[in-house]
Image (tube, rainbow, N blue to C red; front, side):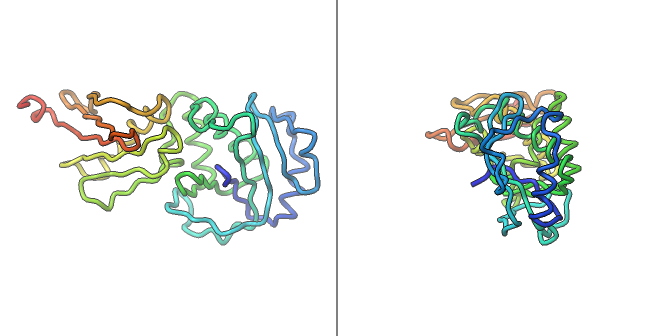
Length: 241
């Protein structure tokens, strides 16, 4: 399964022609010799990291969430899929490698006029303009682009649950946020996801500061470190405890 796909409205044949005309050297991309084949698949290196790529006609996608794009994938007719190369298996747990993959998506997405991006671990389709903006901000020091890479389930009142975070750090998140609304709770969730995606999983119980003075968030991993339960402790609750 590919990790990331750039979604194109043109036909597969047109995408293949566009691929052949990309100024790879100017973008800092090196194609492996065996990549120069008529099937337009193979290996490339970007910022010292190896990635496998494959161009094909658009196939059905299992999309759980659409982010800043129409909830319809039928307008896309081709895609270029990316995965880690053989030398970087397990790169999903290395934040610097994931950042390079995200940046590769911007460089090639602009060159190929992509209009959408599909992130398979979270089953998320996003509009390319939003993707490029969020990733650029992350590269320049902002928070990890959680909405691009992690799906969030808010159907359970009082709890936000992640889907796809495990791929990045080995752990999913369940954030108990009562009495806050889900929208406000997402501010806390995005910060927790940033820490988990960039620093790794939490393997012991701890408390971290909340968003306002006096608040804390308790973090409790399960016995296998696969699920991190987080609970907001308000200032008055913390004082009474």
